[in-house]
Image 1 (cartoon, rainbow, N blue to C red):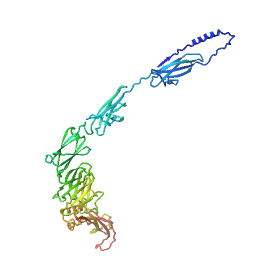
Image 2 (image 1 turned 90 degrees about the vertical axis):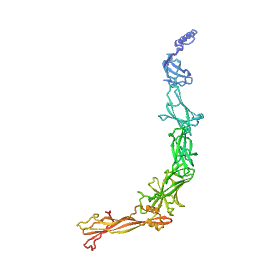
Image 3 (image 1 turned 180 degrees about the vertical axis):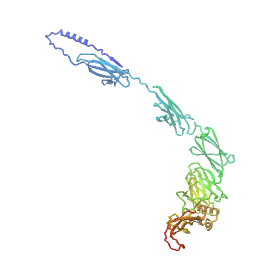
Image 4 (image 1 turned 60 degrees about the horizontal axis):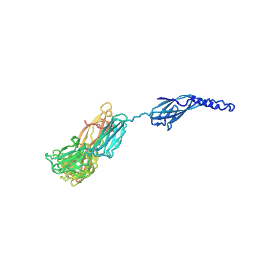
Length: 634
């Protein structure tokens, strides 16, 4: 905006008229003879103009106004001064933050040389109208959905959906309120409210764009409910214990339940039923422990989300009977438990089947929480020599046989205190005891490893400690001693009746050797020598020793080749020896050493020589010693 200010002071012509008037008046009082006449002085300097500037607004004087192009600034009174020589129009441009920029033109009139002219100028600046921005607030109150009481100390967090913008965490005050004021950006905010012991609450707060100067409040009324409930509602179970005949089981029963990870609770059972209430969302595990050992224990985990909350869930618990060698029992952490495994009866039609009776003793404090333990026991006599690609069977491998195997579940369960596996001596009736047993374990029941669990014997029972669940078996083991001897073999010859030499390896001869193994002292003879007569012990020692089938030594025809060249007219004569290893397995039974001895055929060592052949083969000839050799049986 440009405005022009014109000067309105006393005119130059009037001033000159006054000067001329007073000059004439005074000159009439004097003669030229009285005062000397001085000629007037005329200045050659141009007139000087001073503009006294005052800048105001509707609120009064304005300080700090920048005036261009003079680079002037108004003081606290809104004033500034500009001076120049020469008349004409002067443009003043005014700038101040918060006000509209404005320009004013001041006309400086012509004046005589040397004259000083002051021109007052008042400039007005209009304030810029600033619109207040819209204000966005998220305001909330958190309260207990059941009691309606305010909840203090709840944590409130917010995130602008689709961005990384977050709101600083707030904490509800004593009256349960929180506030996010002057939220910078509009959009949908995901609000999460948490409080220990309460269900988390999630709300979407939508801040909609409004006009400048308006205030937009998004108000939240947030009920919170106890953790694990659905709007304060819980689940209830009616448990009914059912006997194997379908009738209620009214005898001694202990029922324990665990809701999620909460501490387990024991419930009284009356007339075969009980009511469990106040269950929270998630899972509930029911444990039923029956005092009568002929019944299995019961454990089952239920997903409560499959049921309608707020209603009573009817839950039948069907009891089952323990079976031969197979039983499940609930073990409580604070109670010692003896799991009596029903006896395994020997199958008379299977010679390796053996009767076994076992139990597990679990001390109080061995477990951290209620657990359903299952024991599956087999009475089977089987070879228990451990061998694989990295550890093959050698002549020094001891003879081992297992007679009882237990699979204990859950697999991998570890104990705070060791539990004890007891196995009644299956040879107790015949009065015999193995002096040394060892333990083996397996994760999958297929690959077995030795374990340093000591096996003790007392009052007709073998016992060992177990620190974690897996598959275990008790193993009868032996010591082993070996001796090696050689036996000469009858070998064939090769006669070169041709005109050319027979090259090394091109001639063939026959011989007989042995393969397999045989008892030098059989299991029966070894037991008889120790005064022991028991069919199952006999089978056990045979299973232990027979890492390879012991079917006797067989004579087999073999073919060998010459290992040196045979000159025409000469004969190749082979000689050979076969190695035999004698292994003595010593078992300790009743404090006696029972020695079973096995002889096994090993490698054949062949040497060869050639000599001049005549009709009667009586001349000594040139003899060349050969090396080892042999061949496969034909």
